[in-house]
Every structure is written in C-alpha cells, then in structure tokens.
Length: 292
Image 1 (cartoon, one colour):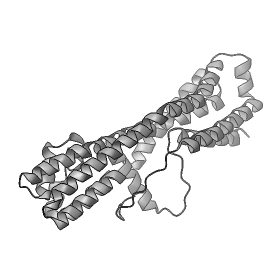
Image 2 (cartoon, rainbow, N blue to C red; image 1 turned 180 degrees about the vertical axis):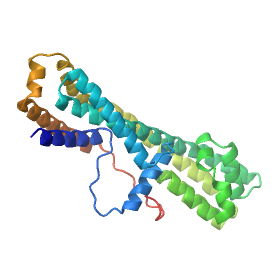
Image 3 (cartoon, one colour; image 1 turned 45 degrees about the vertical axis):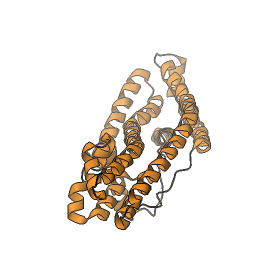
Image 4 (cartoon, rainbow, N blue to C red; image 1 turned 90 degrees about the vertical axis):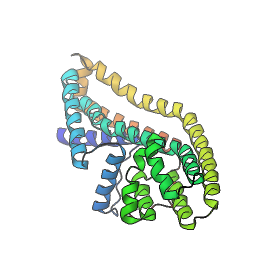
C-alpha cells in the first residue's frame, strides 16, 4: 500500500513539476528513439552543455535524491518530502531551459545588427559568403558563436549546405526564415541582395518588438501561477518540521491520501492555467528534415 502510494505521489509530482517548468511530459509512441536522443542532445548543446542525455538526467536524479533525503530528514514524513524532491530533480532542466531560451533569444535579437553588417560587407564589395565569414568574426557576439563553423562548412560542403547546418543547430523559426532568405539571396545574387537584406532587417526588428510586448504582458501571470502552486507545498513542509499532530497526520494513511489528492488538484489547476496562458508555438515550416 505504501509503495503504491509512493509511486502515485511521485507520478503526480513529476507531472506537476513538468507543467510547472513548461516542459510537460510527452507520451507519443510515434517518435523514433534515435530522433528523440538527437533532439535531447541538440537541446543540451543549445543550452551550452557538453553532456550526453544520460549524464544530464543522472545528475538531475542525484540532485532529486539529495533533496528527498534533506526534506525527509527535516520533515520526517516521506510523502511530504516526495513532492519537493521531484521538483528539485527537475530544477536543472528548468534552469538550463532558461539558459537555452536566453541564448536563442540573444541570437534572434542579434539578427537586425547582423543583417546590417552583412549589407555593409556586400556594399563594400564582398560576396555574401565572404560577408557571412566576416560577420562570424566581427559581428554581434551571439551570431559569432552561431556561425563559428560557417567558414569550415562552406569550404567542405558549399554555402547552401553550410547555412542548412547552422539552421539546424539554431532550430528557431526566426533564424529559419533569415537563413533561408540568405540562401536564396546567395543563389540569385545580383544587386538586389542588399535591398533584400535591408527589408529583412526591418521585418525581423518588427517581429522582435511584437514578441517582447507579448512576453512582458504575460510575465506577471506566469509568476503568480507558479507562486500559487509552490506556496502550499512550502507551508506543508514547514508545518511538519516538528513533532506534533500535523506530522502524525501526514505519516498516517489518511495523510498520504490527502497529499495525493492535493497533488492531483494542484496538477489539474496548473494544467488549466498553463493551457489558458500558453502562447501558440510558431511552427518551423522551413526546417530541414534533419531537425528534431
């Protein structure tokens, strides 16, 4: 009975934590295993980590186990310690997800300046590949990092293939559009390239303004939703710090059921809030077949 209760509590807490950090578990059966691993490895690379998926999740589980041991030692109630422990085990994922999002946002925000650098380079007499190589050395820092391999890839496979590889690494709809237009501009050539890049820089700037307005408007609601979820569990942990009726109750079967029901209701509420506040994800319509 206790084992079933522990498994149920852990499952509910895992789902709650996944939706809390914005990475809900996926249960699709049609996704190939090698594609899933490739997507996880790309995710880690975009977050700046030189780890395999197994190493990352092993470290996360270790953090969760340590958190469970500490919470159990403090509260003396395993079922109360289970929920915070699973949330703690997902904190590395949440943290590096934010790092990844920040790195991608920096790349997107650098595109207007990068496109202006490309325009200036072409007006100075360089070809588009030469201007891109120059941007990878002297352009905005985020684009320097993104295009660090361009010169090598361009020599080995050509400009189009090099741009496709970088597009796969960035895996961002805005970068997809920009790089696809760069590839088309390279193939067509001519005096229209500078005009295309100038118009593209203006369009990307307008898109960035719109995205920033949306994120600013929804920030307060997201903070409130997470606070409403977290506060009851913090209070529950505090009231079981010492021996007494609260700790005795949550050590009993009725207390275990109460925690499971509370986790279920928290999950339902969080699902509703997440669903109502979710922004529609822009599909990567220009992604290549190798992208996750």
